Length: 360
Image 1 (cartoon, rainbow, N blue to C red):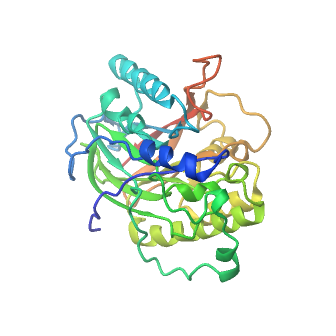
Image 2 (cartoon, helix red, strand yellow):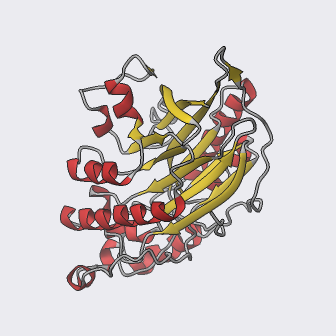
C-alpha cells in the first residue's frame, strides 16, 4: 500500500454558537493555532516489544492501546482546555516513567495546539495526525448528497460555514510508523455543528520489532447526535454517509492479511441503528462484545452496567487477526476517569484502554 501524505486538523461540538460575526473569528484563530510539526514517515521504532516463546514454538507479546476523546475544543466553547491537555500529557509522562503507559495512544477532539502536543510532552517518540482543516476528501465513489438535504443546511447550526478546525485525530507510539492513509469525510457528509470540523478517518501501519507483520491502526470520530443541534433524522443521515465512506476507505486502506486494531468516538451509544451500521462496516469484533460473551478470556477492570456494555458508550475499540498474527483482547481498563478539577475528570469522556495479545 502506498503511503499518502499525512493530513491534519479535527472536530467541534459548538452547541452555543452565539452570533457568527462575533464568535467565528475567535474560533478560527484559536482552532488554527500552531500544532507541533511531526517527523516525516517512515518513523523508526525506539523500543522493541517483550516477546515470549512457548514450548510449542509460538511467540507472543502484548500491546496496550488507549483511545481518548480529550475534548480539546477551541475557545469560546473550550475555554481553558489547554490546562486539561497539559494534565493529560503529564499523567501519561508519569506512567511512562513508571513503565505503565499505553504502547499506543489514539486521540479524538485534539483540536487545539496543546492537544496536539500531548504525545511529545508525554514522551512518545513518534506520531501522525489525521486530516487537517484544509484537507479535501479523496474520491471514494459515493454519490453526491441529495439536493433536499443540502438545501436544508443552516448557517446558524454551523453548516455552510466551512471547516474551522481539523479532524482532531492523532496516533502516538514508541513503535515505528511505516505509513498512513487518511481522508476527511465528504464536504456534505455532516450535520449541524459537527460540520465545523473536518472529521474523517486514518489508518496507520505500525512496525513492532520482533513481530513478523505490521499492525494496522484505524482511528476516527463520527457525527454526533444531540450535540450537533439539528434533528436526529439529519444527524443519522450524515452518520450513514460517514459510515459508508468509512467502508469505502477501508476497501482501499485495510489489508485483511495483516492484524488490525480500530478505535475512536463512534457516537453509537444507545443507538441500534448506529451500532448496527458500525458492525456491518468495521472488520473484526468489538472488544466489549467479545469480552462480555467470553468473560473468562478478558480481565475487565471497570464495572459494567447491563447486559450490553458495548451499547453504553461512544468510545469503541475492535480487532481482527491477520493471516499470521492472531489478535486477542486480554484486559480492559479505564484511564482519566478520576476527579481532577472541580470534581470532574479532565474530559467528558474516559480513556478506554485495551491490552491485546499478539500471537504468531
